[in-house]
Length: 636
Ligand SMILES: Cc1cc2nc3c(=O)[nH]c(=O)nc-3n(C[C@H](O)[C@H](O)[C@H](O)COP(=O)(O)OP(=O)(O)OC[C@H]3O[C@@H](n4cnc5c(N)ncnc54)[C@H](O)[C@@H]3O)c2cc1C
Image (cartoon, rainbow, N blue to C red; front, top):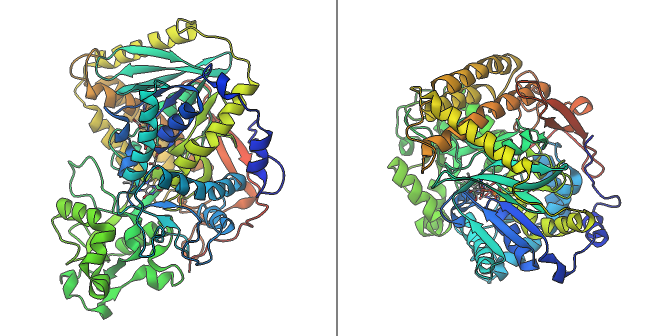
C-alpha cells in the first residue's frame, strides 16, 4: 500500500501546516546525525549545503572529479518562478494549473502546488548567493517564456542557467566542506543501497580510480542521482548520467514510479552518423525568438533562405495559434515527427525541421540574439558548421529527460524509511510531461527547502541504532558486488558494452519513445532477454577491476539499463491510455492528441521488485483532482 502522506486541508495551507506540525531537531543536536547525499547536481548540492549549514554531518558522493561537473551544469534555458515581474497575469495558482495541465493530469496536486509556492523563494535564495540572472533595463530580473504557458516566468542566465545555479549551490557546499561538515567523495559510484531492519542506513560504492569497493553508513540516505535518459544510448544528457543508483535501490525494495514517462525534446541537433555517442540540445528558450517551419513542397531543393514566405509552413503556428511555437514539448515533438514522417522534413535524412531567427535578426539585430543565446548559437555553429544568424538551425526531437523515477511521498521519502530521493531521480511533480524550466526548479526546491524540513522530522521521530560498517548487510553487499564484477570480467567475450547499449537504445527508441503500441512493446519485451543473453555471454571488458576502467563502469551501467528497459516496456504496456509524452498509437483523439482514460488510469503506477527474473508487482497510487479538473489538453 502506498501512503503519499499528503497533509489534509486547503492546498494553499498544506505545506505551511506540515512544516509547523513537523518535529524539529535542536540545532545543537543535529551534529549527532549523519546523512549520505549521493549526487551533487542541483538537487544534491543544494541538499548537502543546506543540511550541513543546519548542522548535520554529511557525506556527499559524485561520479565526476569535482562535484560541479554534475549534469545540471549543462542546463541551458532557465528556471521557472511565479514572481510575476512582467505583470502578465502570473500567480502561484496559474503556475500550479499550467504544470498540472502540462503533465496531462498525472501528477499529485499537492506536490505541484508546493513547487509553485516555493518557486519564488528559490529565486530569492539564488540571487542572495550571487547567481547572475539576466536583468532588464530597470534592474529587475528578466523573464522569458517556455512551452505550455502564456506568461513569461522563466529566469535565466544567457543559455547557461544550470551552470550559474550549480555554481551557487556548489559554493555553499564547498563552504561546508571547508568547515568539515561535509566529507566530499568524488569519483565514487554508488552500486548498492544498504537496508538494515527495514531502514536505509548506508551505501556501497566503487572507487572509480582504484576499483576498491567500500561501504558507508549513516542515519539516512538521500539519492539525487539524476535521470536515466541515457538508457536510450543517444540522449541530450551528459554521458556519465545513468540509472545505477536508483536501479540498485529499486532492487532493494524502493518502488519505481511511472518508468515509461520519458520526455522527448523537440529542438535538438539531429543525429549526424552511426558513430555518434551523444546528442546536443538547442534550448527551448530559442522558441521565444525562433520560428519553426518546413517547406510546403516535398523534396524541396532550394536552400532555406531562398524559400519564399508563401512556400513555408510554420506548422506549429498554423496548428496551435494560441501557443504557437511555445506549445509543450510533447506536442511540439509529435508535430515535428508528423511533418517529417509525411515527407516534409529537411536535411539529408529528411529528419529535421528549420528553427529560423531571420525575423528577429531583421527586427532586433544580431546583438539582441547574441546577448540572449550567444553560447547556444556558438555551440550550434561549432557542431554543425552553419551560422544560425544567417541560415536557420536544423532540429529534430531527441530523448532528453525522465519524468519517471523512484516513488516518493509528500516528504520526498521512498517507501523505504530513511531513503529520500530528490531532483530528476524521483518521479515527483511533472506527471506525464515536464514543462520546460521546471526541472532546475524542482531540484532546488527539493534540496534547499523541502528535504531539510522533512528529513529533520524523520530523524526526530525515528529510533535508530548505532551501526558499524562490518554489519552483515554491508559485508554481504560488498561480497556480492565483487562477485558480479568478477563475473563480468571473466566473460572475456568480443562485444563492448557500448555496442550492446547502442542496440538496446535503438530498440527502445523504436518501441518506447515518441509513440508506443502493444505490438511494438511486446516485440521489445521479447527482444530484451536476447540482448541480456548477449551481454552476459559475449561482453568484453579490457583490463581488470582494480584500476580506472571505464569499460567496466559502462558495463555495470548497461547491465542495469537492460533490466530497467524491460520495466519501462512493461509500464508502457500496462498503461492502456495515452497521456502527455506517453502516446499509445491505439489511444488518440481524432486530432492525434493523447486520449487519456481517467476512469482506469488516473493513478501513479509504482513497480515493486519481487525476485530476479520474475514480473514485478504493479501498485497504484490513485490521483485526485480537487482543484484542477481534468480536461482534454488543448493548446490550439
Ligand atoms: C542539455 C540539457 C539542458 C537542460 N536545460 C534545462 C533548463 O534550461 N531548465 C530546466 O529546468 N531543466 C533543464 N534540463 C533538465 C535539468 O538539467 C536536469 O533535470 C537537472 O539538472 C537534474 O538535476 P539533478 O540534481 O537531479 O541531477 P544531475 O544534475 O544529473 O546530477 C546527478 C548527480 O548524481 C551523481 N551520480 C549519479 N549516479 C551516481 C552514482 N551511482 N554514484 C554516485 N554519484 C552518482 C552525478 O555524479 C551527479 O553529481 C536540461 C537537461 C539537459 C540534458
